[in-house]
Image (spheres, rainbow, N blue to C red):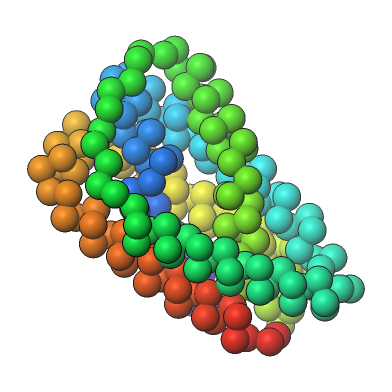
Length: 206
């Protein structure tokens, strides 16, 4: 089990990443504005269910890589660093996107759409592969259990942030349209975080 200080710092990072404007939270924002808070929360629940699938997928393969394939772990580490740099570059280039409306859907359809949207995006698995190993250590027990715990913490942070977006969609939508500079600086802050994690991952041989 990761120690409390690591869990707390990871939760803070997860909240920051969840706050950064991107396809998922903008989708939640638009659907909440058109379908109401309950519809938005259904989308949030679907996205979080999808994150469970990604977490389990990472945990199932990570322990084997760490235990018996150091060369594969090194390749994964370097690939993860390169992917984080790619994400940082994407954050720097991300334009300020206008919000668009969404048609009203039944709550079950919104839940299903949230699940499919998340599970069909392989970048989520690649991101977890790049991020989660940096907060695990064999000194803290089972790496698989640590990975599952960190995934749960990330899901809780996502549920907290995305739930707030769903409840306050109207206000947040107006805020983003009136102040595009907020999104501009969030993109740059996210790029800085990604670059820092990439350097740590690339330079740490463990």
